[in-house]
Length: 165
Image (cartoon, rainbow, N blue to C red; front, side):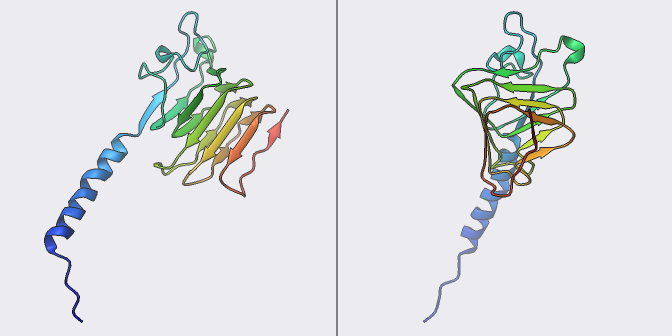
């Protein structure tokens, strides 16, 4: 029984689809940086003007929290029960992130080639933090500190974070 060869036209179209899709996928990964300090909303994660892109970070964004100590120490606080989802989270040295009780943050790195969370600064988790689908370590602590009594969920059985009280 003869098998029919795959038509060259089909192979060409499939290759073209991949070539066009990959750059578009990578371009959709945007880094958004915390600025903070909007009057009356200085620490509000859910205030669009507190972010470099003038919008709240979403599921395709790579979030960067810099040291804001020279600009009034306005660091983000998640305080609502509304779920927030980002692709990657980097908390730089001197920076802080706080999740209050009832707050939930999901870091879903399915489309990245990085760790879920890079922690150089401080993370106070009294809510729920979920890290999933990261290509590297779900939670990488590089001199930072993880504090709080909140729940940390990862999809890696081997993931561990040193918690300080």
